[in-house]
Image (cartoon, rainbow, N blue to C red; front, side):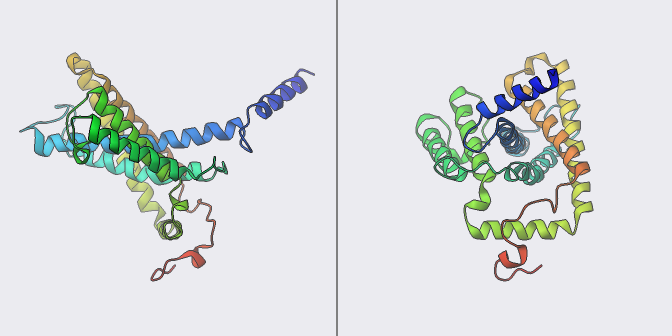
Length: 258
């Protein structure tokens, strides 16, 4: 009797919290997918900023030394974030959430355009240098957040932006499937390096308390999540599992072949 009541309550709860044809669980999974995508971009953005300081801005700077043995390792963290974009996006694209008035990419473009205007006219940094300068002011970080947020929405719905993009992504997925093991090995290796950076940053902050800032805590968090996702994706596999709306052979751009 109690089991039936629990099932009835769950059914009523999920029926009440629906948006269109989407249940609450579908919405949660979609938010989770967007969060994974955003984290990938965040890792890349942080890595770009650190590498800019390592190469150009600060003379003889060794980030988080001696625990990070070489600043060039952030290239690998950026690579891990880039690779994770693909399986993270696949998580969301498998969900048939429909759209509210327009496609997600439209909202992404609107958010990005608004962020560019905001950064250009209301912050002291140049849009082209947004992720290269060491400016942690609230106004600049707000601009960075919305640029990455808009790009997240755009990447989530990228195949719907243009047919040629959908065809090209389908073709890339088909080609990459033939080299699964090397790609998974690369993803695992970059993920392990990201986890190493996470541990190294924590050790550095444990000794240098003056460096415990919101920015460094976010950096530790994003490298951890990127490393964890890389490891999980590499072991579970994701290539070849993408649902193609159009048969690959029929969708290939001219000049491409299976």
